Length: 193
Image (tube, rainbow, N blue to C red):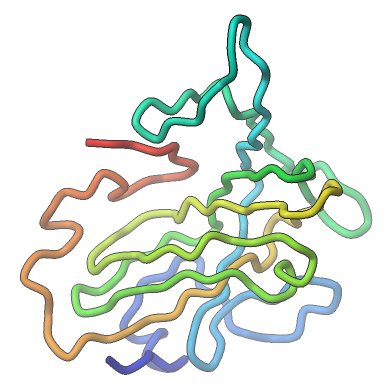
């Protein structure tokens, strides 16, 4: 299963808006790279902020997930000389959406991995696959594994997509299955069909 290079990514994968790799002093890198594409985090976040419930402990349940466990933040236009950003509390996490809209070809599987710039600060992006013919803005989970608040900069690189081209086309794609996260336009909470 070969990995797509920069020219193949340009030709075969729909990414909007598409950015070329170039030096952007003072920014976390983004755009096409030799064998991947560094996606950007948008300005909208859902920050996990559990609040004790009367009469017991709140349990996080992926089958019955409560949107009340998040505070929604849009940092567009908010920031300082370093850029727009959001603060993730210590030992917590945030959901975010990518700037880019991705359309995965039928014979490609995409693996999304975190960028080392953030990982070296204790911020981890969940490794997630994008299946063949999946489309949408990617909802990412960023964990702050540190005991300190952490900044994440909007409109800058957050993770890298690695495109694996299959030797054969799959019989059933994500689109064929009418996957539950197909065509998501932004931040999407967990769903169970």
